[in-house]
Amino acid sequence: MPKTYQFDVLIIGSGAAGLMGAIQLSEDLSIALIAKDQLLEGSSYYAQGGISAVLDSADDFNSHIQDTIKTGFDLGNEQSIRFMVEQAPNAIKDLEKAGVEFSHQGKEYDLTTEGGHSAKRVAHVSDKTGQSVQTNLLAQVRQKSNITLFEHHTAIDLLMKDKQCFGAYVYDKKNDRVFSFISSKTIIATGGASKAYLYTSNPDTSTGDGIAMAYRAGCEIINMEFAQFHPTCLFHPHAKSFLISETLRGEGAKLTLPNGEPFMHKYDEREEMAPRDIVARAIDHEMKTHGFDCVYLDLSFKDSHWIVERFPTITKRCLALGVDICSERIPVVPAAHYTCGGVGADMNAQSNIDNLYAIGEVAHSGVHGANRMASNSLLECLVFAKTCAKHINKNERQIDDLPTFEDWDASRVEHSQEKVVVSHLWHEVRRLMWNFVGIVRSDRRLQSAQRRLAQIQKEVNDYYRLYILTEDLIELRNLVQTAQIIVESALSRKESRGLHFTLDYPEQLESAHNSVITKTS
Image (cartoon, rainbow, N blue to C red; front, side):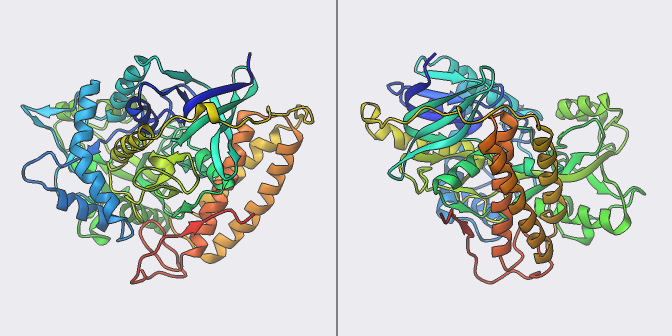
């Protein structure tokens, strides 16, 4: 078995961004698409809500743009936002051509409203939009003979030479080997980093791999302090990471205290339809003030047949756990959900490193600002995957001119007899981030987190040098690095804006600026 593969393009990640990018690339290019788990396992697949797009004659682009800018607390890049919004209807058509069947009412799209939107503009496939998008895009990918799929492959580090990227070292979990994937162009589409937190809606794959690798390679990492907490994750001991879609609130569901008293009117005139940062902070405040384990989301006043038809996935999952959403309230808590910052990328998805691109949640494309508006995420994946592919297609292949790299050397490491160390540090990082770098922050807590994370990173680096690789070790190394970037970014922002709320600087500054973190050595 060879230790080196060569491709024109390496795509790291098999979510909506990675799959759409692979489809849009020229069939003349040889493409490797790697997934760290099964191909469909990732945040895109579990996206319940939908995709925002102006599809109603009563709506318009400017309204979508202004809603996005306002929700992002004026930190979003208006040029990027306008481009994304204007391309949204085409993105919907691309998905329909791929086989995605959006929910309709008669001949019209069954559009719904979510937090931050001033109009009904969220197209959806029942409450399983991500699942439909992923399965149909993957079916298209499988039809292309120029794309080779690699499941259970985890990228370790980017292959760099003369400040250019030429692929990555990749760990094959099933064969327990490391391969060099050498490529002319590399696209990072690894998703976000919400597994850095103890409670999250994300699957186990969201460990900040792409962000950490890009940082180590010299990329600019932008606005990582803006970690979005989804207000409503199901609170149940056996419901790992199960999200209760914001669409329920869009359809009228009310947040209440355990005694049935509503509370969102005290925090924002938009009540349940306020942006996620406001709703999450409101829930967090009520829970901490009164000592509640959770709050409740109530949709039971709606017709039960309508509920089952509109939210079949949520109804079925909750019922299996003993919660009948047709007749009782749903216990919910906030959980880390979406990484609004990431690898700095321009309109063509290019990073500041030659030959390296970033798309989807791993990227900072400028469209979210200080807070992501609901259902702009899948849209971002689709739109910028297309621009990325278009840019690569315009450039000639350089596969014959690729440099050579040494094979991965594992001759000086040994099997660990202390794997409990990895497990312990993994849990410590996540609990530390939840307690000290969560929904409400302070410089004192951030500085405490910074000091302990520096110690943990040293321990992880020592372990990494001494022992043979495992997937858990790769992920822990990336998780610690990404957590440090989040803390450094948070400490650098001397204001409260959007998702970053600090007790030391409760006011928002008049001028908006990005936080940019780069490796100094």
